[in-house]
Length: 316
Image 1 (cartoon, rainbow, N blue to C red):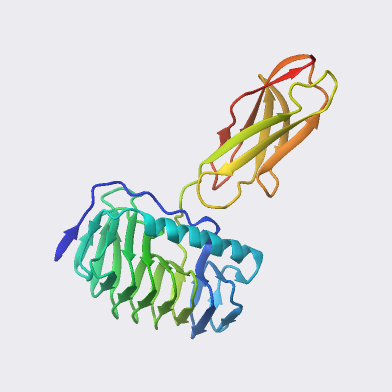
Image 2 (tube, rainbow, N blue to C red):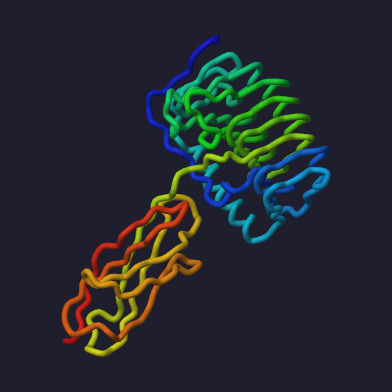
């Protein structure tokens, strides 16, 4: 290898929110030529012109300017801004080919990155290692170039953040998620283990294979808050107990169940609504002081969380 780039600081991951289900996502148009295979969802918003499917195939769902892809584009914008704002840990040369890179956040002095030959991303045995490459203008990969992942490096945790547009050369192999502010051109025969995400412009495909990574980001943390109204309340008067569950990152709204307890006694189990709120009304609380708690049970993609205790006085 010609060189090794490294940065000792731990790098936080980038939450893609609902955009994580997409292998291809664009703003203006998606155009395909030939037998492209997209393993994952394909989405376009606000544009509506998706052409070339078939002959291209999509194993997931094609979303064209619907509410789901609209939310995914919002989440992509948040992810792009967060990744672009992550502090750079090292500045490295434009040409990545022939080098080995360890986890970190990298920029180039020219604001561009190019890959000719092979760049090796070495996670050094850490499957949670994150690589972020920030190109202020372009990312260009040469024909038959390759991004090689070793020692636990995962495509789901590699991010190519491009301030303008990316072009992937013919028959090149790319690992990671391309987050381009404008457009991405994927030329003939390219293989992508990751995602092609164009925030504002077009994605152009030509007989390619794009596979959303099987290994995705871990569950998003949550926080649960609790309110009881009215408080205090006369004996026998209905009180409404409300829990709100919020995600710690991204804009996705947690789903699942919330258990409400009074001390060690279970009061109720309620499903979260589409705003992340679970509530119920009861007149069964006896006179006295009650220690109310809400417990979000958690689901795949969201961790469990518990609210602080709320003390409810009945009878005054």
